[in-house]
Length: 77
Image (cartoon, rainbow, N blue to C red; front, side, top):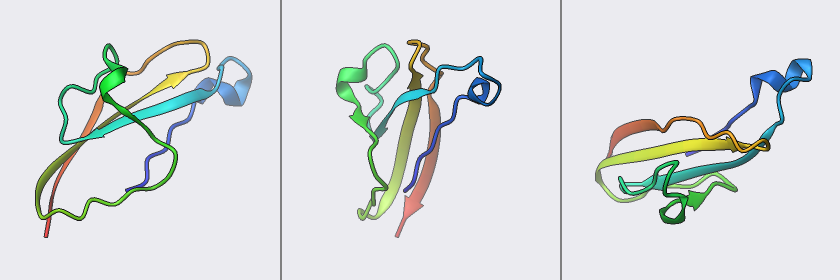
C-alpha cells in the first residue's frame, strides 16, 4: 500500500510542508491525539493476511497542524 500527503499551501508559499505521515493497520488506537500507537510511513507496505483490514492514516505538517484521520477498509484474499 502506498500513502502520500501534500500541503496544498506549499504551492503558493503559504504552507509549511508535510513533516510526517502516521498510519496503522487494524488498530483503532492510532489517532492524531495518540501518535505513540502509530507507525510512521516511510515506504510502501504490504498486508498479506487474508480477511478484512482497516488502514487509518493522517499527516502532520511542519507547522504542527494535524489532519483528521482518513480510513480505508478492504478485504484481502
